[in-house]
Image (cartoon, rainbow, N blue to C red; front, top):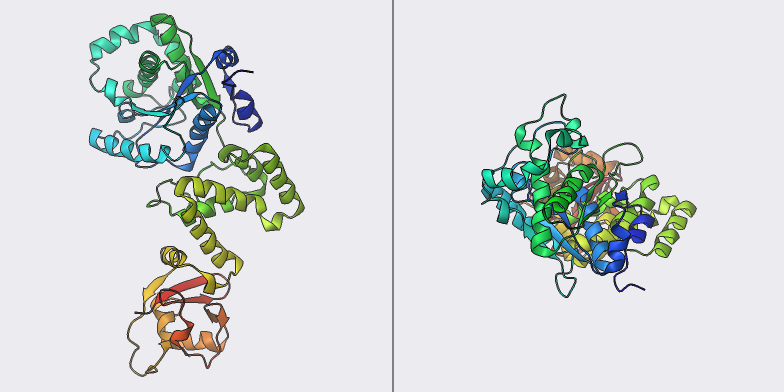
Length: 428
């Protein structure tokens, strides 16, 4: 048995394999392969749509091969036309560099950078920024005919609406990257989405013509949800980011909890490292009791812990259980209460209005501070109707004031109107 098994069978059962060059299995069998995948630094964070190629590199490393993550600090200034219908907005070099540094830290959560198969992060700005146009045309451009480039899907799809020379040249820059990494790092495999096939094979052609070397390509399928919507968008339509400042760990966790029953089995295969037997067991649990969402829970916990850490995942589970599963708020940790402040209306308790009770915490005041009630009169009616709970206990019309003995950790009160409207107050 080879000391470096091919990850192809692993990717195949996980449905992550779209296509690969014919000689790739033999290359894996012959020894350790160094493969790379590029990431576009036009945003300050990766998003969940980037996790497919990230997991591709993870599986490559787990099979005993060496992954390289290329941050496109140079090509990011242009933008890849693949899968796009319009020109990208060009970014300045300082912004690209800052984004690249942020992405480096996120990739480090997935890849091991130690040992003989340790991953490496590279930035193509290191060689593209100083590359002269004349050298590029002489050493790279002369190996490709315009007809060859026009035949690529990434270009053909843009011809009717127009494509600038800037984006038209992206294919050659990506091919140049592959050749550069072939020479610098011994790279013989490039991985990417299925829409990258044309760009990747241009790199194979350049390596063959200039270095006489053998190189390969492997692509992943482009992902859509069962309902036809684009994968990776939140319920509000925005991207789900790996940066906790842009998508909180709780919101990240909820994104995976919300996975459609029709998608969760495939998503477990894509985005977790759970073994096949465990995933099949979760598939069976989903079929037997879909309302329990055991597969979604396992999925959300696994991916959130990998991206944000085990503590953040645990806090996200606490907040989710409170808001959607009627968990007892008395058991909330201080970290969960802190996280909750960012997810539901939050207010600092103010001195009671004139005429309010002198002792205790005025519920009318809390309800109006949070915007749950528009006025003290509206707050009174809500209590009279039995529509308000504090810390999980329903209030009556007589419960206008609650004592400080009812406070949660950190001197908090959790108020709930009906089943889904929450607010949190901290009492100084």
